[in-house]
Length: 323
Image 1 (cartoon, one colour):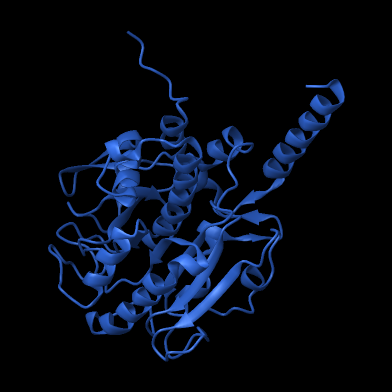
Image 2 (spheres, rainbow, N blue to C red):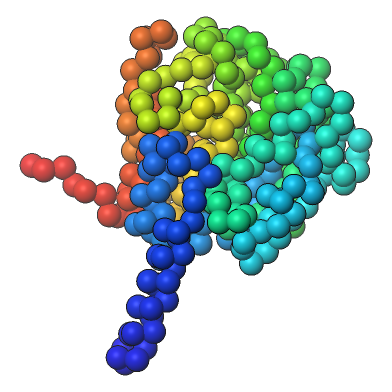
């Protein structure tokens, strides 16, 4: 490489590193605890941080005029498309008791005024699937319609990940069959990650619907900065993520798997050694590289996500144990 070219390339990398370091993480303490800030530092010159991927936010609507969604520091508008499966139109505005969906995408996706989510270069598909995030199983039909819309349009809008945000605030120790189940299976078969928050109580005998369903990964939480399980927990919990609420832990997880997917695609990593499909393989990688956390209340041991460790495995930079 010519000296001028080398100098120019070095300048670009330094500029990228400076720009990344100058950005403010959407949730600093959980991001550091989950290894996300370390990923930004270690892989800032390798990852695009969600570029070319769309995250579907399925919740109770969104105020699209908010600066977080109407403006973006990135190359593309943050909101790619919207849909309301309750009314059957493209206007996902809050109606009735809706309020939650306007902020659920912040930890995963925000790229506004110097503040960044995990996969800050992604785009989002905003889907209003019910009236209020604190839902009832009776909402299963409109949620199923929203999930079917994703099945029908995932290729057109490059949807790779779904944040299924509602919780029914009940303690389910087993799945509750509803119309969403066949849609969840279809999304899993398409290689699309779908996860939901477990709930924000102190339940230890079950978790909220729809997180309790077999086609949906259940994301719980540890206290930010401390590996202590809190809020809802049960054997169905698939992964813990640091956050002040499980809705935020799930949002962080959704952004994280977009980076993991990009790393797998970039390196041609053999994910089939970990699972029958890509979503299950990514969960297995996150669990394998995660930090064990014992929970006295449930007498279970969970895994807390360490995104840096997961990417180190995929990129082949993980430290080998000493003999």
